[in-house]
Image (cartoon, rainbow, N blue to C red; front, side, top):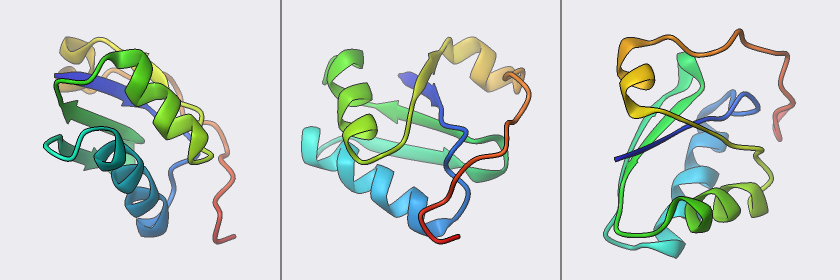
Length: 86
């Protein structure tokens, strides 16, 4: 399991773009998104660097976070993000 904090992810379109980017890297990946917390958890055989690059190539800066931290809900404060829709 790999977790990323993606503060620029603010809507359903963002979720779809990130999910497509991950699936393009690993079609078998399982993607779980918590939009309110700007958190994406991925179960994948791909390397963290590959997944991060795919997400960033889709236009979303991604910060890896420890899975234990993600599960506890202790991510960093949210910044004002830029959404592709807004």
